[in-house]
Length: 288
Ligand code: AMP
Image 1 (tube, rainbow, N blue to C red):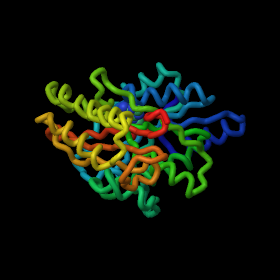
Image 2: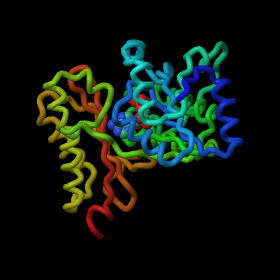
Image 3: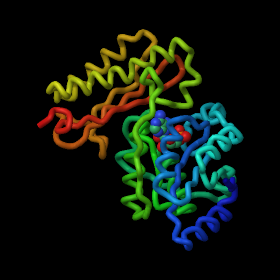
Image 4: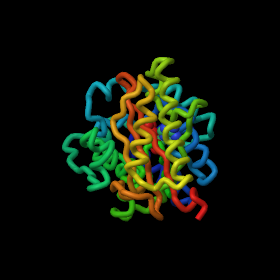
């Protein structure tokens, strides 16, 4: 496994491998790796000859300086883990090499970026879209892997690669969860034990919504209220939003129809804000 810092060096290493007809895979991350990330790595390892994991805590996607500073960084531990999973390259550029003097080009994905997480974190998806475009241009992978955990990020990246004719296939992997159902996240480490136990209410509530749809409940506001009531039955939880939207456009829907519906939530436990989601499909679930 090789660790590369310089963009130019990364580009030339990847160019050489492409000339050898190698299939390249990229997993973009911000480090602090856990099982959720590793599920993407494992899938990439099965599909590609060369697996690249980028580790870059991208400043342009943080709207609070304190949040950026607090983000956990441990390249040594991450590298040890990635070596165990037969990763070929870690790409860990410096911020100054990505956003050098005079940097002034940003990628904005309209509509899909403005809602949900975008509404709570202005500029977040502009930062995400910009760094992902830079990484895809640097590495030019055949496949890039993203987790369903960040459902809106998936919608933004899919829109972006389609609109800008980027020749990389986006592979989306299911949410990896802790034993109690809580979606794996580096933020979970910052929860108290009590909060971490209580946070199991999030997935339990999403499963209730799934169950309701299976039993014929197709009304979005009924489902929203059901999830809200359930989550708010936990005194430590404070809901930020609960959305029942089209999985591709993220536009609100009134009734579950034939296309997949995303139920996405953001919930605070003390200072920690957690997100989670589930995709519901009428056909598969109601057995029609
Ligand atoms: P991050 O380092 O938080 O930017 O995450 C890097 C990638 O890992 C993103 O595509 C995330 O959606 C994905 N990821 C993070 N947590 C999970 C999880 N619990 N299950 C599946 N994918 C995840």
